[in-house]
Length: 205
Image 1: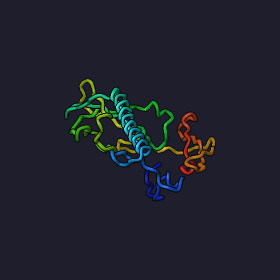
Image 2 (image 1 turned 90 degrees about the vertical axis):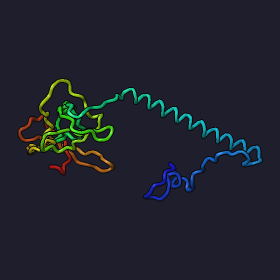
Image 3 (image 1 turned 90 degrees about the horizontal axis):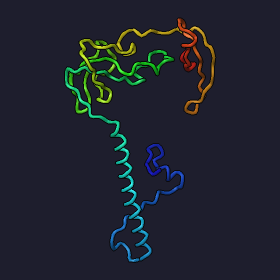
Image 4 (image 1 turned 60 degrees about the horizontal axis):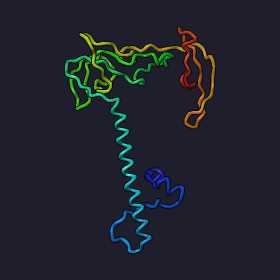
């Protein structure tokens, strides 16, 4: 609530209360001779100290939990690895009804270069429409002997993507998105079964 916002040129606190937030003053020996004021300053100083200690403890706990799932991983040039593609990179023209069953890893592909400390460049198939440098967390070592690269999803392979033609609108509905009313339609695609019908915004039809 005390972060300056460029649009309003004020902090949220100033907008709500009409004044700047009071900052806790650090206590220094000899700042005041009034006993009550000195005690209040010392109490606030101790409060700040305890807050810092608790924040450091919380950071350490979060780090320990995160480290439980982390493993040191490195590869050498020439080694074959599988690559994990994010879900949004696998989307084609039409959303699949079985998106959760799509492959998580593709490949394997050979490592051709190490980029920095935590990234690697892979030799992807010619015409691939995805950047060949991947973070180490997206790579998994391939076990066994491989001599040919695996395939990428059609939407990233540089080949012609199959386009689907709508055959009929089975149903319509209105939903709220970002404060606006959006009309959606359930489309039956030509050459597909009714179970493969998908919901899309009406303006796409």
